[in-house]
Length: 446
Image (tube, rainbow, N blue to C red; front, side, top):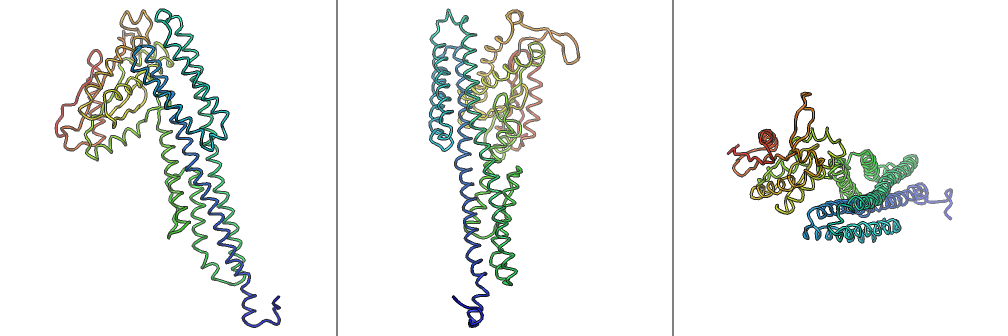
């Protein structure tokens, strides 16, 4: 053991700087452990939680598609529709199997087993209904629809429970990152103060970058926790801190994408809303892609909604969304887009060569399926009596659909705002025509 009183100058210097030497060893080691912990938590958020949330979104979408094709088959009895129902059921099972292999799947094994059993029951109900003789179809329809609805609601609830559990765990991990960062900052600050009291300025100089970077990561964690997903930590240089900062940016972008999708998705139809529609149209026009922008509106919907109530009106909206999506999928291209502006207004985008066949298919399907929402008396009469916007009693015909089509095929320059204005004008023109129609813009070089 070295005695301070009898030590040489070198030993005295060593004893004086011994706390600093210890600090120089402890500080980076603690910082490294803390940053590793933060990075591991962040990687679990990106690789586990986001994967589970994405899988649950796919599961919800697949059962919605199953329901759509199942109900469609019960109406049309087309083998092609039944095959699509089976395909979406198979995809549901594949995604569920992948989910079961994740950490969340292992934690929620019992609930996933319930989802699998419930989906099997859901599919069996449809298959049994498919085999029902047509003579018995009307008598059994209400019973099976009620059973199917119960299983569908149970499936949705179970999937949403897993999604919510994962989302809550994700939020807890974000808060955990903040706690670890705060703890690291406090310890580092304490060690820094001790180093300063010893009189070694080099402690501050040597670890200023680390302290500043940790503060930036703390700020990033707090900003992300508040919902500011675009925040970029100002960490300079390279190494683990920079990679961690890049991970924060990646996590923020992924969270922003997820939040934007959830916020801009119409809760009734699960279709993208106005912000996404505007972005997609603007992007395609800026990239000079050939595009046909088609605005779809239901005629006489308000009168129908006033007469039959919002619940039946919502059913019409969902049916219309299914009709548009089905027509676009069957007659369009892989780059098609379908959105729901709100109310009874929809949008789909395709290439100019495909819009006519899609419009005709939408009109055909809509005119064939919409009368089922009316009472037999109203459907046979061909109109309903309701109050107009001016407060007058009027006769409103059976609902039809009006489609306004604007393309950039013969336009050198036209932005997304102008496209919307032209579509709105054409929609007004289309609504003056009796029956379901589509009207195409004939302007050139707009």
